[in-house]
Image (cartoon, rainbow, N blue to C red; front, side):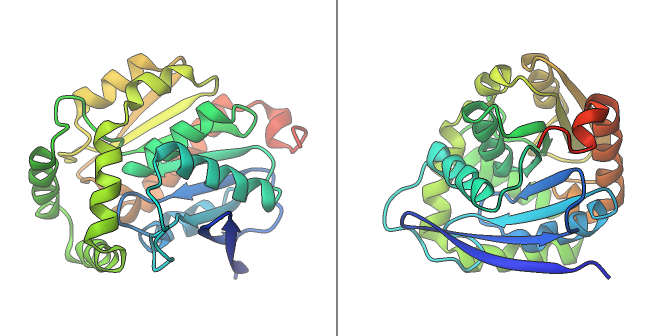
Length: 259
């Protein structure tokens, strides 16, 4: 059985939680949840990836029952807090994996800290540039809800309750403002974009647009899945991540030569 350790980190006035498994394997995967969520809906992917390396799932400030910050925290500050935690636990270069709004936080971190990522994985990236209003996002979320299995919806809405409406809506404003399509082109590492084939939030045309905007990127669809493919098809998502890493990361880096 894989040993799992949980820590809470203080970064200034912010609290960040990490859940780590897999010991000192060559590759470290860092999993970052989306808006309103926590590491709980990444658990299946977390465990699937332990076959391929060390895995660290993250709860960012105000999410997963962590204290709400006393000030607004934008995408850049969230990314900086995540980077500081990874420095604190001495991960070295990592594979960043974000889902939904987590894709914004990991792209921003990769742009601000080019020393940190080996590669960036984006699962259901947001927000489609043609659908950046609250009403449009609410409709897409409702549509996705009817395409997800009951267990996935139970996790999502349970975490939404823990997050609370104020912090959710505060972060929603940043989600709608953040231009991931501009920042992704600044990344110097390979990018894998993934979506469920039935995902109404991260459309195929939008993901193709992000692929074209990146310097080096591939696009993978998970058949029959909606926005939470990392929960409903963790094996397929983990396999896509591992295949991409095997194809794009230098053997020396994967053997730990990069520190």
